[in-house]
Amino acid sequence: MNGPVSTCLNRAFLVAIEDKKDVEAVSSLEELSLLLGNLGIKTVGTSLQKRQSPDPGSFIGSGKAEEVGVEAKTLDAGRLVVDGSLSPGQAANLGRITGLQVWDRPLVIMKIFEERAQTGEAKLQVELARCRYEIPFLKGLGLQMSRPGGGLGTRGPGETEFERHRRKLERRIREITRKIEMIRKRREGQRKQRLKTGLMSVALAGYTNSGKSTILRRLSGDRKLVVADKLFSTLDPYVRRVRLPCGYTALLTDTVGFIRNLPPALVTAFRATLEEVSSSDLLLLVADASSNRFEEDIAVVEEVLVSIGAGSIPRIVIMNKIDRLDEDEIRTRTAKAGRSGDTVIPVSALRGDNIDGLLVAIEEFLDFSRGKERYLNC
Image (cartoon, rainbow, N blue to C red; front, top):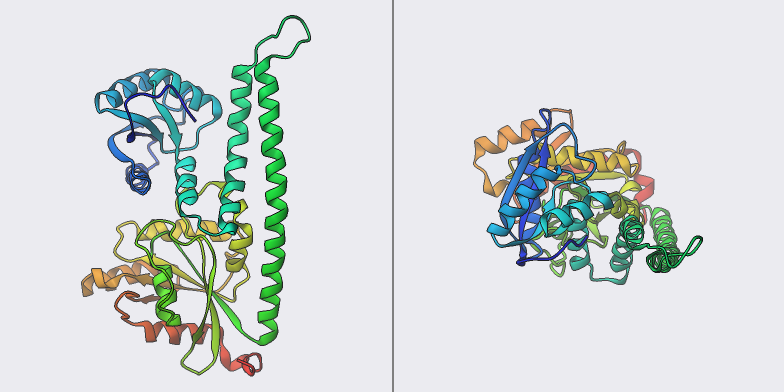
């Protein structure tokens, strides 16, 4: 989404709309600023506009857009980032009115996924999401570029260019989808093979940067696992064996973290990866206990789990990073996380606090006493 570019593109001005029922608008803007920081883009200003719904023409309205454009340029910002999803028309109008390059939240998230993707599989999934995201904007560009070529019935040069790019994107989407379907079938075969061996599967699910990879490394003892304190550091599934107190083994899988307003195109593209979660016997829902938004984060993860068909899988809530809290805060936040009746285990994956208690809880949930025949070959 490119409008006329001015000033500094690594400095961004953020905008969002807020209605009377939206109590999370401020925290969502803070998170968007954090996302941009992971791309090396500094937030230099924000604007929160109170309105019932987005303006269909420019999301925040033309008057507000003019005001924001002036303020952003005063702050030497070259990029306007909207905390929401823009239509092609809204993006084009915002770029025209403000004279700034325009991004929306889904594009920011996809940009981070593109930076984090290391393996061929992750890169394919991110590219698929990006292609699907770009097609509507390409259509808008095509309409904008199309002009009569010389008389009735003729086709404008812009329309021809638009159709050429659209066919190219659609061809690439079909090609990537075929490759990802092959990956999905291979993973399905691997899961069936694990089932034959009697191994039960446990999947880590949680908000991005909640410490899932650190928990996997701690429970499996695999010190070679790379752990990074940054958003979406894990895009590919990692599977490791975990020895439980009874002596039997389970498989623990870590995969992509979730976030508010995760673009549907990314959820769809990562279907092969997320099936590792939806096919598990037990979920470990990981939350950052030190975050003031941990209850909201848990709610976001629950929504995504339902959307991928994993909402009914038994689960344990892990309150991670308790090393950052005092005893009273740990008790209070553990109680809040367990309001819905879930078993909640407070841990510090970094220090190893209460990891033994977590292993006991996993064992109890997998109910080995009724399924020992499945573990004779473990």
